Length: 125
Image 1 (tube, one colour):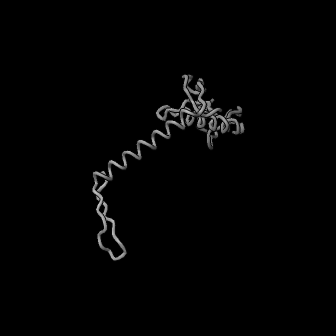
Image 2 (cartoon, one colour; image 1 turned 180 degrees about the horizontal axis):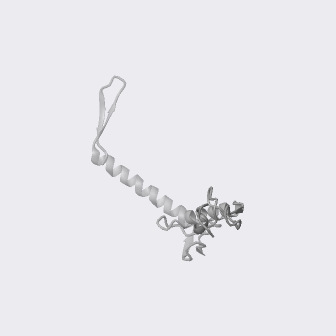
Image 3 (tube, rainbow, N blue to C red; image 1 turned 90 degrees about the vertical axis):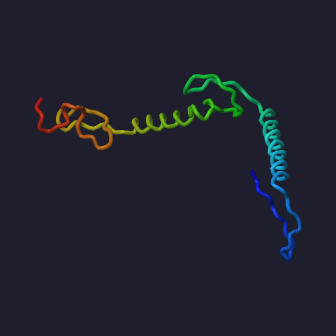
């Protein structure tokens, strides 16, 4: 709710007081007009129906090169981007040889041994 506004002249004298009810009504009218204009802009845009590459659901989109559905609760575009970066990072990892058994493996961070039985240098074969 918007509170009342006092309009002052140069000398600081109150010229006019606008009541909160009047301000709220004016604000609501302008807000309705703005939302109507936005809906008109959106309806004038060309839309197409796509199949989301991440979740497989059908969705109406207004962007011509959209690949993912747009509801914010699904986050398909974000999840797909994270998945792609993870795959890229895995592909960039260089193979190492296990310190104990000398088998090649792709390490995670500073991993030195290929799997659980090889983790301890004191464990026997």
